[in-house]
Length: 399
Image 1 (cartoon, one colour):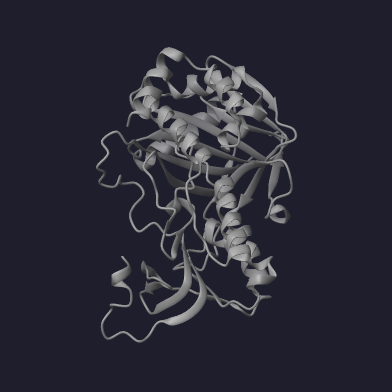
Image 2: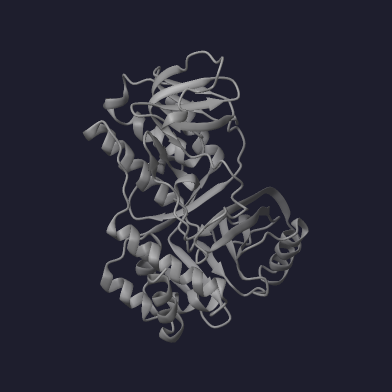
């Protein structure tokens, strides 16, 4: 890649910055927010590039935290209690000291733009990023309008459709899609308990693969109802609406409601390795593999990656990301579960039911955050059938 730097013929010299953030979604905005909190960056020219003006509520992030996080001031709602439902096990789960939190996309975008307006060293440009390249001492970004140069480029833009698996030499790799459609519904009267969130409800058809619903009440009359699947292919568009209507009718017992907002998303669930860094180009967000392979959770992993980047720049004036032993351990766990789901060795609904039934919810949340100890990992493993998971683990260890 390095030898391609600055090879666009007849182009003007690239415009120079200290750092370039390519993509202003969750990852890019989180990185910029962390940079703004450090004096180290006050005299550094920072460019943020995105084709979108980020002026719409295009997505919602939900995650769990024990302490106040980077975006605590814009948390839209929070729940201390989660509900889990399946045909074999159901329970109400108190997750203290954790809270399950929701942040709306538009609130995060507006907050970061508003904060950055106080920093004259930060510039935003609405341009479409075509490619990023690394050299020995600089990296370059080429957009539909200009070429830009910086000491580091932080890229969160996937340059391919995440719905399509990349060509892969490793035939043992798995590539599922987590796809979801959500409706924010409003009822004419009080119907929801805004202190409890349905974390997973598997009491729906599992014919197409792992499928469940979230119900996230934000007031007694409003809730985000989201249909989520782990499969290799997306559904026809109308099938999501059919499932949402059926669930709201049969499980929420509602016939009188209005849809206030709709959201749709697709996240890769795979054990394929995403690049952490290529020279002076550092990858973040989905493009950097921050979506957990076995669950699709990304928000907390994005926060960890962006915090590590900023800490490295402040203390070393450089970035050198490497996979840790813990990263490898949890990537193996992800591969094992993906093996089981891909080959349909065990229904995903039953896997999650057993894990939540036989472990404190706090341990499960730590496990999903890649933060458990080996002893805690063993307790999780004891929850699921050895005859199914041990052969899958042996296979993945040998791959």
